[in-house]
Length: 304
Image 1 (cartoon, rainbow, N blue to C red):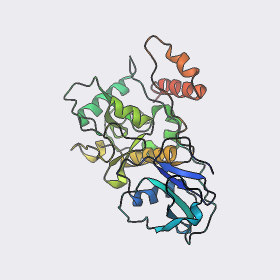
Image 2 (cartoon, rainbow, N blue to C red):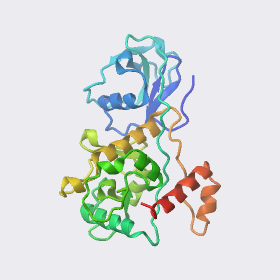
Image 3 (tube, helix red, strand yellow):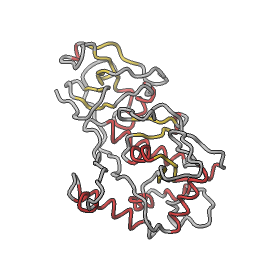
């Protein structure tokens, strides 16, 4: 019997009583959404497995012999209750449940440039003008942006993946100076408060465009983000955040948070004043990867 070391209140177990998936339910996640999340994380066709409620009180010891009937997932808009669940064959027998090896692309919290490239400055200004509020909380900036960030949906540090995925070909933005890659298009940006920006960059919140742009918090929601809906401006479609980019970020958030090990890149971003940020990052957990991401972000803003 193994359990994930991350904090969760919904746990999915296999026939060996090992935790294979899980998340923190703040109240807005339905069973139909779980069907989609399992489609992302489980490599079996959905007809080959089912989900069953564990009947033992607390952390179960013999869930295979103590579970309820199969729970209908598709089209089931009932909220998932916290607790333990089994993933078994469709007829309730133990089954090897293969979990995808795909991982979320690593990203660190992006930081403002003191002397930004003109394209970044234009990106920031255009996102501010379009949204003028945090699209998660609805808090108005009203022209004062000290507590707001114009965030890239697809991270600048992964310009190589942006290009290999041909994301620029999906951008319809007609602005005259967004560069050849188009990663600084207004369609790759949203305005967020500082708190929302940090959680968005760390995959702890995400926006589901397939559920009317609902915001999901994958961790305990201390800011009231979960279950809200993204604020959308009345700008034309070719200046709106690109749906497929939000969908990609949401997929990464599911991969990051649902799998048994939990988030792979949950780094402490609080660097105290007076500390050397390069040294702090380099000496942290997975410091080499973090350092490479920070450097890639800073270099890529010059070449896009």
